Image (cartoon, rainbow, N blue to C red; front, side, top):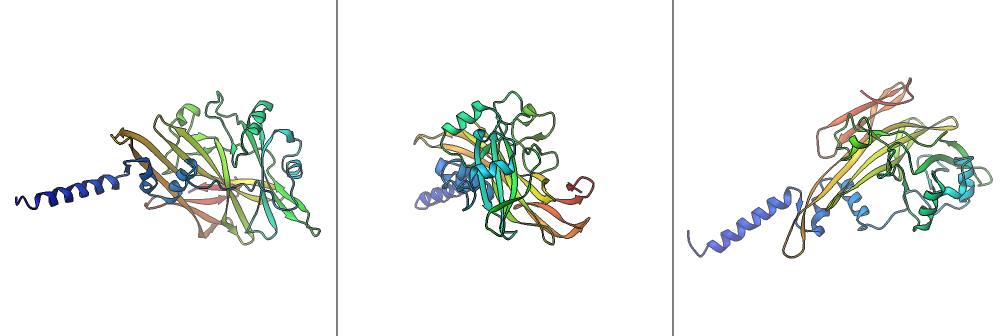
Length: 316
């Protein structure tokens, strides 16, 4: 080898090895981690949980004009102790003119309420506690409602959940990885949400004039270095005066596993992630449009059809 070219070849080899290492999902410092996610949804979740992105008011805790916390609590969660309310939110629903989606989060005990209310106002509602002895008992109970403004401009309740939302997410038929300790918290591939994170108000049109709205639920796990996050989508539709849960599926996950330390104080982070997109298909079942989950950047997909018997979407 010509010695004049040796430094150049070494530099090229080093650059190639670095490019390969950086392409395999390994970040060599914390600053590099966001660039290693394959999906935008996982990257956004990481930034939010690390405090990199500004905290958004995903549930609309700054209530629109004409709404008060006491009124929303009394109508969406009647009979509940308003002093235990740890989050009340209202947001306009773009798919239904003059309509608003609402959430009321009520602590299950006075002690939980006191602790939550002593902390800075949260933009999400805790569900099942990771340290709870009972994985089926929620720290907070969640009610949802729909309001419309009457002729006088005053909000009027149109529909609400008839009981707190208590449907688990099921990972038995999905490409999305499940929380690490799921087997320790459940007898199946199901788990109740640890957090209710935000409204999802994308245009989920089920049929002419009939839309669903979404709520994003989540789970978080801390490692000795790094952590993991998992997210599901819950869809609700109006059925008379009731809000019915019609769909609950995993949508996103990521794992950030910290590895070797470097002399400069930085540390490797191995990143893996995945997310799905929900599409409304042109085909229908029992008058409702079929839904399809598709892996972002992959070939996996799962179609769901309406079940008139169950009143919800089921895999097919």
